[in-house]
Image (tube, rainbow, N blue to C red):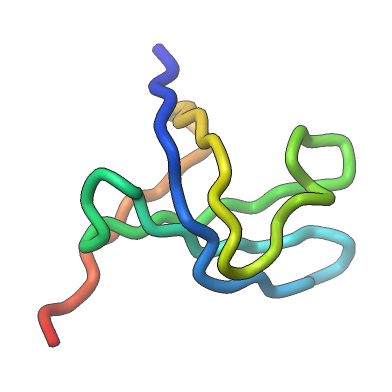
Amino acid sequence: GATSMMAVVDAVEFHRGIRRATLSLCVDRTLSIFADVGPNDAGYDSLEAGRRVPLTLLPDKVRLFARPAQ
């Protein structure tokens, strides 16, 4: 099922009409997420670096990766 939480947008890249966002989870900033968001997806227009956004994790749409220790 889906899981909802807050995230901070770290960066957004544009590629063929898709916005690829890198987000950090507010509950654990060491966990980051790549999210590919198209014009028909909710939140497409609000993806800006530095913004806090609600994030719904759909198992088939999200890849989690751990940020390397500094």
